[in-house]
Image (cartoon, rainbow, N blue to C red; front, side, top):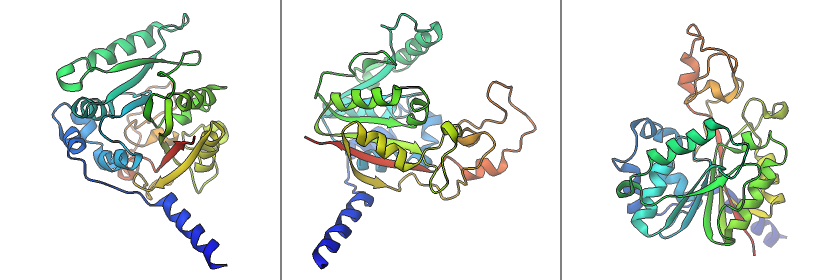
Length: 277
């Protein structure tokens, strides 16, 4: 009876224990002058070296980042790819979508302009992304697909999360990694339709496994025990959004932000999935 129990204990440890290895080029990218001060200020909450190391970032990899937002990871991953002979692919608004809004087109153009300096960032490749977009990359060509704080948005749009995960699975090599960071609701129950921006680990894991991924490891790198997850405007009450009024309403100058700023950024799950086969 001892052997099955020991095997189970070892398996459980593998799920929860991160492994780190020194990577001077990654540290150089994180410390680099190409990064904006607003992004650097968030490092204490986002733990870039530890998180990327846990996800398995290595030199010469092809890395796809899904919906990079303001470019927090772009400013690290693109220079790292340049320095190590890798490829960084960022998804952007789907220019092949005839219904794409002018605001979305402008947002993509501004992002590309912001990171156009190849001396700093190397040559960034862009992939169309949206509910009707094509493949993220050639089948089986990517080593790592990263999504940070996006799943709570995709899950509320019918069919989008399933499509995104399917596209990520197709783009990855066998053994490739799907890297996930997401606002964590556990141990509290999820809000209806995930309206507060938090998700349970069970929901995220089930969605990834349905797409063909296997959970390889969990990490508490981005845990925040101060986050009570009961804020008036959901996760957006916390930094960096710091929402102070209902969505669509002007900011409330009388809203007392003190206790929310003291919490800091949300409690987040950090997961590593692998494409089996």
